[in-house]
Length: 279
Length: 332
Ligand SMILES: Nc1ncnc2c1ncn2[C@@H]1O[C@H](COP(=O)(O)OP(=O)(O)O)[C@@H](O)[C@H]1O
Ligand SMILES: [Mg+2]
Image (tube, rainbow over all chains, first blue to last red; front, side):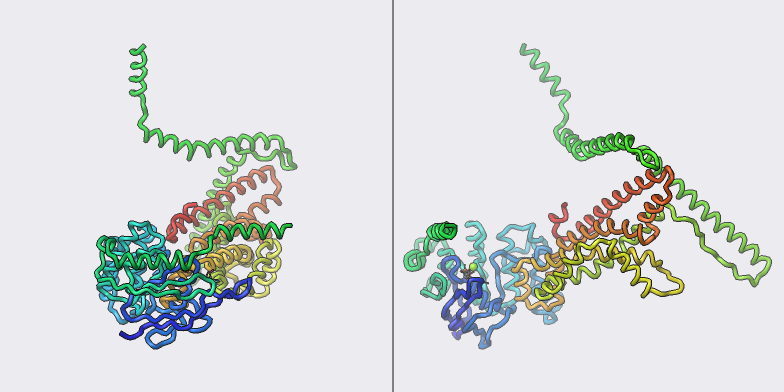
């Protein structure tokens, strides 16, 4: 299969009050159509920055992103984003939230009846058809995230970008959501980039796991191919030797090769510096 | 001993009030009883203080004197209305007679020119304050949205807002008066100048809180929601309509409530000076009048002014409850 999304030599330098801060340096990644790629790395390494550049919300300082042979330089619905905090419009119902996206993306292409059907279909896909007409403050965190996913799917994106979509959910809800996502993926076979900090989630869902080094000047450390049979079942996989090997590979990368400097030391250092300043 | 305790228990059971009724009583005491007690204490303090203040117009009015004035003011209104209808009746009869005598006669209808009653003045004040406030809202909310969306515009406009915000209505009024007399020249003004003067002064004073609150509300929209709009490539107008406006409704209403409060305060001062026939003019006329009733009539006006100010805020809150999706911010 051909390359759908090509991230090449991407650098990201943020101007900060203390001078330029190089968040990313030389990120290179090619993603094929229908592939499910997860980005994993320690907090603050630059995962969201990569995703935001792909989404077009940030502009890379050098290098860039090519989707379907076209350079990405602004956001657009062909790169739908599922944000960590659902980001549903609180004054609209689940249905209306999806409707805003559908009417904007398809506009006059779809008739009124088709639009309605398409919205309902996508809400059904995430098992939210029973609470279509509820507003975000009337449904649980997991349900909000489901609606957020439905909204993104309804745009029929070329790539689905998800920034820690289940990060704010409790473990049980998260497991449900992962199962739902696999089920949807089985049906639609979307191209997905998902950020996660959950090792099990990465192995369970991905075709490839992209592991990022710590920042500043973070880049891709290693890429792990996950060749587990689909459909995958979390219980069966728990005893699968290949699953456990992949899992420990990721853990090794995160906790041996890219051990994060203890933040406590940092805090002590800051305190020392300030006391020195005072003196 | 044991029989005695069981007897007590039985009596207790038989007179036990159901707990929900108990809760209801507690709640009504809290909601009605305590404020009522507060008002009573205030009345007591007021009447004792009033008895000890002697002015050139007699003793300072206590609650009873003010209460009597309410009755008087209402009766004056009723009498004036009776006079008015009698005037029109007489005019009609006169005209009918003249038409009868001379069929070519075109009857003249003259308007009744009696003094405005207290109730008329309340109505004028309400109309003036609402016109001034609405004019301000029509300017301030779009301006606030533009300022909130555009950082450059914000930097440009902010110093102007900060400088004009604390200006007293008394400073604006002479300027407004001169400008209105210069620009509004019609032989037969349907809208009286005094009304325009007070209305524009109100507008100038209550513009700023709405601009500031709207722009802060717009500028502090959750960046995720803005990103949703960017991903969907919503056109600018749709972005404002679908995202910006609903998201900043709570802050817009905070600004509107602040502004309406200011508008009402400013109005009384403006009417005093502009001689717009409203509550401010009523207070001023009574002060100039200097009769023995004047102070109690002014005090009655003070109570009415306060009460209307309170009602305006409540009405605004109800409108907010009706319009806003954010019921939590509309609870206060
Ligand atoms: N808009 C920005 N301006 C300045 N620095 C930023 C900005 N966005 C992110 N950063 C910095 O870039 C680094 C990577 O951030 P991010 O991509 O959010 O990390 P992650 O998502 O992996 O937790 C962090 O050090 C962060 O402070
Ligand atoms: Mg992040």
